[in-house]
Image 1: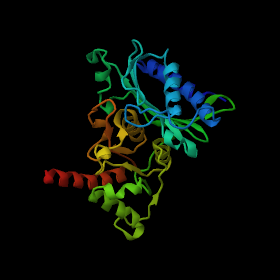
Image 2: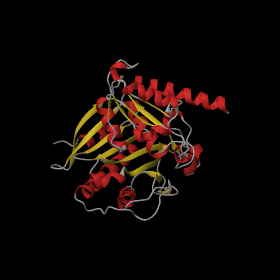
Image 3: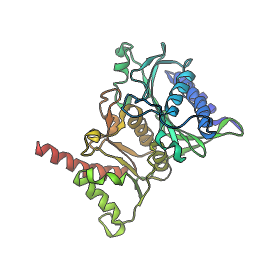
Image 4: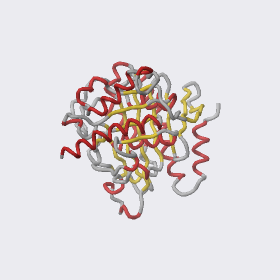
Length: 332
């Protein structure tokens, strides 16, 4: 069986500019992902808590630390200027490369004991002369500046979801050959029939969002005139991959709790790369006000609300959330 990912990256390398560097970084990530998936699948990596909090204030698990170390080691020879990780307080300088990598080494690690799919999310940004080589300037770029982005899914299969700005592709790893041997293109239908949200937080949501969800729950008897199903894994990569395969909408809004008032997902490590993949598959991604990829990047570990999925449904949900924003502004 041919190594389909290698062929894709070889063609990408010939496009000029920094394409060769992009291909080299993705190849290094793909190799490390195989090793991490094997460790998870075979129970080699320890579970439980690591006993300390990461830069986002979440308790690290040994698997989080293992994943971070594994990818950092694999990237030592890659053409990277710097590396930023959810598990590291500050970016790490790597060398004189033309790219910067931001990643969540193991997204969804709290689900590992329940055998739900987890993954790795990554974002590649260009290093430009005006950045002066300073990581804080490089990682301050908005999401639309991403050169490539994607995520690995560690489940029954090892998957790589990847965009380099010309569509979103899915590569499937074949353990019998040791190669990423199959590739399909992802295309999200414009209309949704499923939604994904943690309904246990309903009491904290603004009323316009509650009305939007109530409309979905009423199904064919409600304002939407058709039935919706609810699917929520609590793993961003699992929920994201499902939407890439069959459409739907994912919502992780800001809410009334102090810890969630600015959202819960990291913009740099999670929201921006997921949004890039979704848009390149024909979907849409929003922060509840506007396009996620146009949102200015704040703090390195800053959190944001995130809505993504089928374009028509994201637009409807965003209109509802705009009502709550208008009410808040009027109250001030």
